[in-house]
Length: 261
Image (cartoon, rainbow, N blue to C red):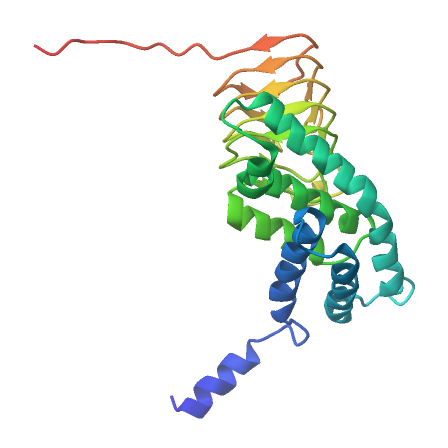
């Protein structure tokens, strides 16, 4: 097979003529700039908001194909959410500081906590998800996933404050509902009982009510599963049915010790 034949065959299999991978890099840079604009004291909010608007225009030129929703209106709508978003994120950060004895000061939370960064990017992406902007919310969430090991679908509904400690391996599905003052540790999965394309418009993931703590590697599955308020879910449990409020759920493994001779 000649080089020309190889090139022709490859070209014939490229089925997405409008697929532009620059969207990914542009969205990731936009996400970083947005995070720094809200929290870095050395950055001018006024200047960066203008730059972010220009960056968003470049992104929207790739993805905004719906003529009934001008992209300038999407950006203006998102801008109006920023004061409330930063208020929620400050609550999230202080919740981490108040409950993690390893956190020495609030600057450490903003600069070094992967859970906080993942929550921040989730809150940004969720606003774009709500207005049905294509691709961008998912690219944002997967960017945070790659950097932190925390996978939060932008469709999830998460109250404030919300605390993820350590975070590696946390998975929160699209139709999850998490209410206020919930704490989650590494390895927790809030997932679906089954995966079927026919369920895409159904609630597939659990609801976690107020003041719940979910410890490491707990797995909670199903759209009808509700974890009642004020409950504590211990590590390594597997839950597929609702838990009443004020419950303590834990796993009791059998550990055996045998001394060497």
